[in-house]
Each structure stands twice: as C-alpha cells, then as structure tokens.
Length: 261
Length: 261
Image (cartoon, rainbow over all chains, first blue to last red; front, side, top):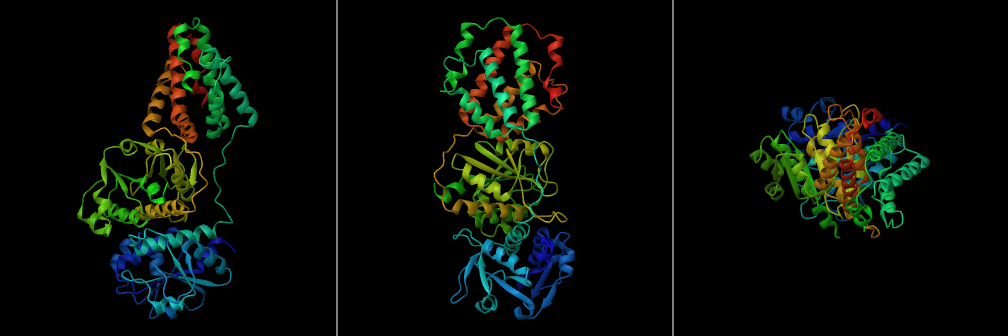
C-alpha cells in the first residue's frame, strides 16, 4: 500500500474544541503532513471565519470536516483509536510515546481506518473519552511547562505519522559525486609536496600536521569537483613559488609543525 | 552533561519575523520542549502585545529574547548553525532531515553553543543567510502543501531536539573543540584575500568559487586548532608571495575561476 493511501486512512478527531482558530490551525498542520480526514466532536463554533483564516489554504481539509455529536460516532469504522494525553489516566491502557503510536497507527492502517483523538484545549480528553480508545499516547516534553498548543500537538503526531508512512520509501536525496579514495590520496600527495616546498612542513620533523590534515579532509567528504579546485589551488601556489626567491630563515620559523603542536 | 544543560546551549534564531504572534507561539513551542534562548534578527514588531498573548505564559522566554541587527550577530559564539529550509539551495551544504539535524545539534552542544535558524514567514531564509550556517535541515512533509507555520516548524525541531537530548546518554565520545562562527568567518576572509593575492580568485569575476569553498569548510566542521593551522598556512603563502615577482600573464590563466566551472 502506498504511503499516501495509509495516511488517507488516518483521521484526526478533535473533541469539543473551544477556539475555531485551533480547528483551522489543525487543518493546516494535517495538510502539511498529508493527512486529510478531520472529524469534529461538538466544536463550540464551526464553521467559523477564524477557522478559515488560520487554515492557510487548507480549506479543502476544513471543508471536508465532519461534525458529529459523540466521540463514539467519530470512531465509527476505525480499527484503532489513539488517545492523545498529557498524563496517564487511572486504569487506562498502555501509555506509549507519540512516535510509538505513529508506528502503530501506520502499521494498523494497512488493516483499516485509524483515529488520532485530541481533547479540548483546557483539559484534554476526559477519562471516558480515553476509555473509548485503545491506546494512549503522549508527547515527551518539558514537565514544568506542559502547555502544548492543540494544533502543535496535532502537528507533531501528523509529522511522526508521515515519517513512518514514508519510512520504507525514502525521499530521493541528492547524491553527491564524491571523490574516490585514489583521488583523495593524490590530493594528499600534492598537498604534502606543496607544504614542503613553501616551508610549512618539515619532512624530517612532521609532527602531527599530516594526520591532522587527513582528518580534516576525511571529515569534509570531498566531492570530485572540490578535489579539482583544491588541486588547481595547489598548482597555482607551486607556480607562484617557483617565481620566488628561496625562503628566508625568518619565514621558516612560522611553520605548521609548530602550530600543530 | 545533563540534557537540560545541552538544551540550554541550543538557541532559536528567527530572521525578520513579520507577525509578532508567531514570535509568541515560537516562545511557547520552545518552552514546551525545554529550549529557552531566543534571538530575533530585525523582527518587524517586537515587543508586541500579540506576541505576549500567544506565548501562553512563556513570557520568560519572550522577556529574555535578544534583538539583533544581523544573522551574523545572532550566530556569535556558536559552533554550529543549522539553517531550516524547505528546499535545497544551489551550492548549499548538506541537506539533512530535522531528525538528523537534531542529533547533530545535541551532539555538538557538548562542544559549544548551537543555533537553529528560521527564516521569514513568507519566503524562508535567503541564500545568503543559509550560507552563514553550516548545515541545512528540512522537515519532511507534503510536497503539494508546503505551508508549515513558523511556530509549527520550531515545534517540530524543538521536539526532535528534546527527544535526542533525553535519549540514553551516548557513550562518552570525544568532544571536539570546535571553531566559532567568528573564527570561521575570519578564516574565510583570510582565504579570500590570499586567493586574490595569488591570482586564483578574480574578485571582478568570482563565479562560484567562494560558495564552493564555504560549503567545503562548513562540511568539515573545523576545530579551533585546525583553523589555526589553516590560518598559519595562509600566512606562509602570503609571506612567500611577497618575496615573489609579480605574476606573469601565463600564471593568471590557470585560475580557480576556470576550474570551478
């Protein structure tokens, strides 16, 4: 099943939302992650211009939202309902993190519809609402400031859900044209020669300069064109050097050998 | 180092934010995840009652926010700056996911201060702003609706960062003494001067040499002692150059400008 089809089976349920702006922000948060199915249980005000304004062109999600009278109605047809909570309820089911819940939701979406259920802004889900669900999930956060905005909580769940849904089909990343081992080695040979020619490296007493430079280059993970640029730079230095007089004793005092120790 | 101490070293930088409400929402998002250091680069309106209203009791974060004139100022003292982007910029540095960036940020916070940098609401970070950072990170989302709210993006980064900080403390790894933003910028200034002096860079026609070199340096994540070595090498080249005769026309033909294309 395609990731988009899995996400299409995951609905967001908002229970008794007080501020219509939060419904709009939720629609926006859902759409940024490819969720589209929004169900509203007894919202205080909906539809509402404030919801439209805050949806930021997620009006399609908002327009498709269903308004129902009870959480039970909102959960009709689902095979899994995840209660989002900020604390463990007495006698509630297992408490998992939102990341674990997202993995569960996506895996279960292969079998049928899934609901992510969010409570009212001020106090969250009631114990009765949590009991209608089959899993409780929380967002790890600052225990001293547990004031996550409703749409922000939806955003994090939607984000985690999308990551799981797309995990098996990673986004095509840019593939850099990396230099080969041999090209890097030739660069090191050229670099050492130039450092010696300009008096920065004393081959009789190299100390730790070469290993340091090798570590730097290894970390940079050079691309082929970058090696070409650096080789060109080294050649330019060599050509300048051939025009110069022999280095003075004074110059030789300031070497990389001293600096590297 | 304790997770809280690591989080205290990670600052959020907002560039030219248009809506003060987003600054308030950002402060709230940060505090829910234990981030506290907020830096504002030329906000349109701040302080502002709307920011206060939307901060939802994260007034301490808002009150401690520093307002600065440039991104460079905002990055002072940092050893890593993560640019948050919605697309890859031409010749920008490596593009990683926000999860990877969070792991990097927390690991690097052992060495020094880290910045998470967010652009303006309408258009995000400029190419110049991205170039001042050393990593670009994006939030995987719906490619057909890339309309993540600023505070929602901060929320996801802050969430990922907190998860990493509180994950089982990794095996005590070597903590590199990384160079600061200012030290790296001085290195770039010195490098550009030398490239120009030796005829490798034509300032009237720099093409893409400098961005390429910046990307290489960003990727290498230089330590302080490595910057010292490179500065010493540049100084040696300059001293050799002063001993040399003026470059011949022949020499000027082989420049980095040609090679870099």
